Length: 176
Image (cartoon, rainbow, N blue to C red):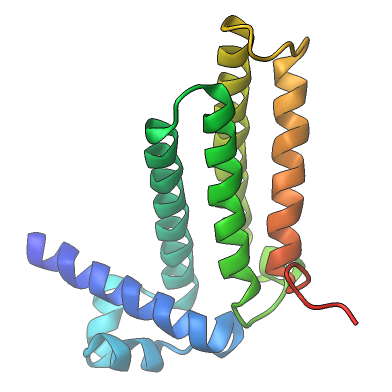
């Protein structure tokens, strides 16, 4: 079972690499299989189609970002540093997204509705983390936020908007 999991991970990393080069529209299972060093029938052992593969890559990305946020929060001292760690990590992710080729988020929502569900769950987790940090700041009298839930919603919505703008290729673009 471990070998299967390792091979699946190898396929996911290959798919991410191909996505970074070609984007979702031009990604082919043949390109992924070649990058992973597999015959295309072997790829179907791990993923039945492109949609399933892309969703798995997105889930891997979400898990990695979540883990990175948790690590950075763990290193932070106090609520201000924790909030900064969340924002900084998401900015780094947005910067990476801005450099990926492919279609915009609206097209993804139509073509890959499953991804939208995964992204919404990730946004909720971020909102909950931000609310926890704000409440911690209130408890330690560093913050004085009357409605931590609303503040977390506003901050997370702003961050989500920034990520969506990056996804559309509009963030970090030089304006003339």
